[in-house]
Length: 496
Image 1 (cartoon, rainbow, N blue to C red):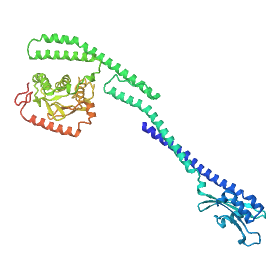
Image 2 (image 1 turned 60 degrees about the vertical axis):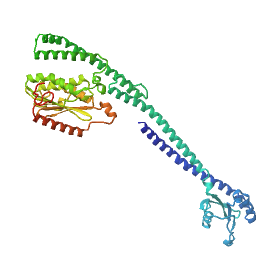
Image 3 (image 1 turned 180 degrees about the vertical axis):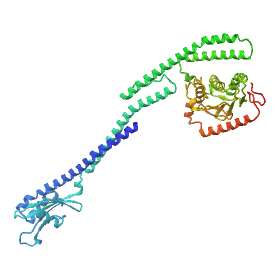
């Protein structure tokens, strides 16, 4: 915008300078020409009285030499021969530069004329003699006198034009800065607000329009902060209302007695209470929930350990429902830049969908693959699959589950997607080698979206597809071999 304004001002000023300087330069040149020939006419007129009195050669010679142009050899007098005398008796005093034809033309017409000669111009002025004949006074005007002062005037005009252009460009640049800087501050503030820095505000400076935009932006930012605060309070209040039914569940679970099912029920109730408490504490904090997705080197966890732990939790229910479970790729430590609670929530959302939206006895598997800059987690099942993966990834698309069943909130897959995208990865849904749904979680290991953008790094789609094909081939190979347990060891059976 700044350079555009400078270019416009430069073009307009240049056109104005050309429109005025060129005609003015031509006028100056014509004025210099008129001045030179006016002086020549005045000098020719000084010899006129002498011609009316006498045509004697000596008298005319003295009169011509007494004038300024005559003394410099620039004035000549041409007196025609008297009537009845031969043409050779014509009288010429001084140096003739004009042609005979031009002299005769002026004498016959009786009007002054200017003709070009070698080195300049000649002014031919007809003058009446006492005898009634017409003599011609010739005044030579050098070319230097015709253009005297023109070059200097043009240089002055060019200097003035350049000064005007430079001044206009400087003024336009200052005006551009005055408009661009507030716009840049507004754009920077919008970017900061988009990155979660809710305390960002814009100084109300600059032109009227940009001040109005700054006022609107600040008002919008205040409204966003207020809406987020209201949302946190609402989440805290709704979560707090769950404490009463949770208390009843905990008391009922305590009366179930002993046994694996009772222990699992009590563990699930305790975990639910912890999750509700976490939601309440997070909602009460003065920061948006999106900042709770901690990523980075200092907020990571061992993905293999977390996956083994959660699969151990879900394996008991899988055994009760007759599901075959396979787990592979968790035999070594795999550090990822995701906080442990976030990864636990994502895995529980995916595994819970498998139990909720596939029939009892449906097999499922979890595969972990580690490359140089990413970790790929595949959760596959042998269920009916997802007819519309795009709709399943839409946040809040409630009413139907992943396979079209009723009872889903539409938030489970979105939780997983946000965890993946917080590391610069993504979430994809496809068809698994088991025949059902395959949820592919790509977790980046080299920083979140902002850091990856600064480093110019992005996950290539082509390389991602190649990696995905290798993973699918490996999963197919494992599915054709002997059954593996939760730790991926042959012959361990479906239970963990």
